[in-house]
Image (cartoon, rainbow, N blue to C red; front, top):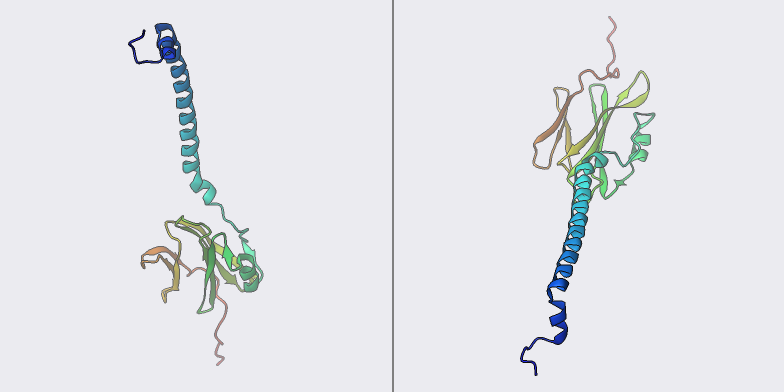
Length: 178
């Protein structure tokens, strides 16, 4: 009669030879799992590192020039990706500016900013700012009296400041004749 409480099949499984086989099999399985984990970690790291590069590509085919303001409005529409399209228009001392920005992401604080000026000689809108603004999901725009176009974040901090002094001016006044 057996006094040992272990079932009979465990006596055979725990013999030295079977234990060595089981141990080498576990090493093989462990090496395979480590390889899988390393491959997964590598792919994840590459994806995280490359995301800003792929994210920086615009979601809209952004034209360098447009014949009319309406063409720009039609190009950008009312929403891009997950966010609405915001825009601001300025006319000051013969200069016309059209700015549009949008955050197409869900959960990523970043937006695209495209700014156009009207060239009266060519009679078309020409893009002069085309930026990916990381860390900002919304902007506000203002045109200062000193001919600077300013974009601020939601806290009022200046994110982009661009001079418009060199942009073409449409004649807005009548010359006096003596």
